[in-house]
Image 1 (cartoon, rainbow, N blue to C red):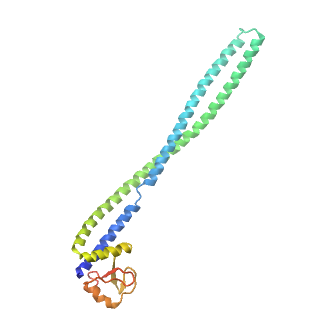
Image 2: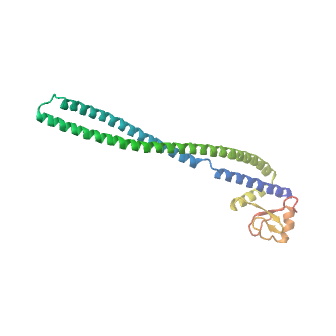
Image 3: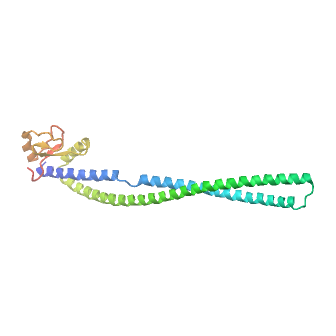
Amino acid sequence: MTRDDFQRLYELQGIDSGIDQREALLAAADDGGDVLGSLEAARVAVEALQEDLREKQSRQRKLELDLETILADRDRRSERCYGGTVSNPKELAALQQKIAELARNADRHEDMILELLEEMEAVEAAVAEQQESIEQLARKHTSIADSYERTTSRARGEIAELRERREMVVGATDEALVREYEAIRERFGGIGVAVLRDGTCSACNVAVPRVLYPMIERGTSAVRCESCRRILVIPEGEG
């Protein structure tokens, strides 16, 4: 091992931290999945409302056709009843009773049609509101997806560059030192190297015994912090 190996190890830590930061960004980046879920739910909801509206419109048409039939039957019987063609009192009374029944039935149909029209108006308002929500969610999803693509595309590109640089640094660094660094890094949350600065370890801020300074400066063997067990280095220009 040489001092240059430890300088490269310090560089490697910076590269790995950069990769970790960008991978964390990718993991945390909002890809618009939640908004897309809301958008899909809104579309399902509006389809259900539209189906309900179509069913009510079908019922309306049937009620109106039934009403036309009832009114036509009432008018036909009224013409017969009051047109002077029926003279039998019993038959006339039965005819008048049927006309009254048809009139009541017509009133019921008209009431049902009016009630149905009110329901349809409420559904139409709900459809319009849901469609407006769909448009807003679609715009929001597009905006988030575009931002996600820009952010993640840049991060992926930077990760690729860092990995390429990492291969070069690892290839030029003492193999045993790299293995030791990677084992420490895996154990201690991604940080395997600490800087000796102002007499303390930059990772845990615990004072480093002065007797270790020359060994760290020479860089002929790995010196680890007695507190946090990271490999201590003195970056070029800070010694």
